[in-house]
Image (cartoon, rainbow, N blue to C red):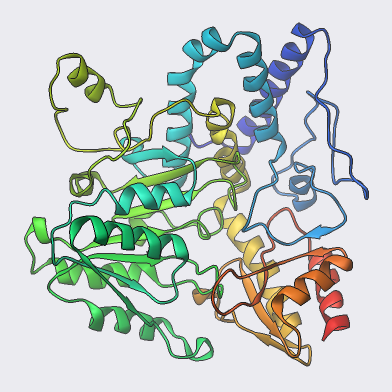
Length: 452
């Protein structure tokens, strides 16, 4: 579902027309908008899209209604919906409110598949291999707890990974008799290198290692690991293995999706989980889980799927479902906030309209500005690697004599929204995105200078 820029503008107009019609059907009722103490970037009347010039970052910024103050530099936490996503959510919400059963029956298959296709097109994937989830956490949970593991199989991860990866692996090991081993990729973040990361993983793989569970961009430091080179190491290991003993490279990709422009084939991985309500700016409570074709044979579903027709037919006949798992079978069933699931496509289309390469360049430019500016301030230590091959959109730092939590509080008093890293070792964390400007980054650095 790739869209050129002219088609994107037409699509935005179509969404506006549909929303206006829905408002008219309700006697002109309008949606209440939250009050903002310091104004917003853009808040047009319902049904009137702000003009979009994908070549103009000011125009892209106008797609968001995020407040001008405080300045939000925490895109890695939760998305502000851009106009096409807000419009689609509202259109579907109104349709469901007017005719809940009929609107769902008319639209669920078509719009769910549109979301799957948009995600697949963005990632360079086969739509049949894409499952829809509610979040990165759900995707990793159903992946790791669904792996066909045997007692003694090893699940290999790193000490640097997030709670969700560690806890999902612990649960899987407890259930199957597999074991979990955690390794360090570096001794000091200041000395990290791509070669060192790849070599550490190469030396850690053992004959019983069945799963390599990694995170593309670490939320605790901002480090981005060289996945394609790691995939080459995994491929070397699999050259000496039977298919049932294959080493699977599984990735938490949430802080790379929506910034980096590689496809899943470029990365060479086996499984990829990510929420789409962060850097993609998709509907809150949406996500994807992708598996590479036949690799799905190594996973068992743990939640019944409503998308998988084969499972329904087997149930009617009191039989076991035929065939292996795929994206449809691995999509958790149940009734969802459908207006959000159905509004995923416009988020991916906005990124495609702007250009994945331009999104990447803009995000890296803002992160580089932050790293270089913060690094010039006495008393500030940059944690995130300066090397752009080893970093993405997250920038972590440490302020001498001030805890990260105190720094976050002091910055919010100065109308700058940052966050702390939720790990045993905490850092101050910024995550600028395409909704931000260089001037906002400069304002954040001025605020840090006041604290340092």
